[in-house]
Length: 122
Image (cartoon, rainbow, N blue to C red):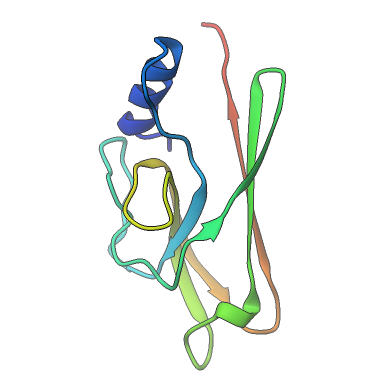
């Protein structure tokens, strides 16, 4: 879900005002995590944020990050319940938030996260 913060940042960019862009992905294991447009965080974050790469083709911007199995914290794996895209490696603006149910991440594999934001005319 795109947050109100991201909509404000897009409006600022269109008006040549100072604005932030997504540069980092964070994950949470909070079982009570629920995303909405007014979210400013994703609850308790697990580990450090992961730097995003991004590309743009016409009106579609794609963000990508890989969470390595080497950063798994739990002895039997991490149960991820949500992700968020932020403008900074700590604190920063939350632009996109996605609850995931329960995704088990173990040391045996990496997880690739891909997000596409499409700007369209209504």
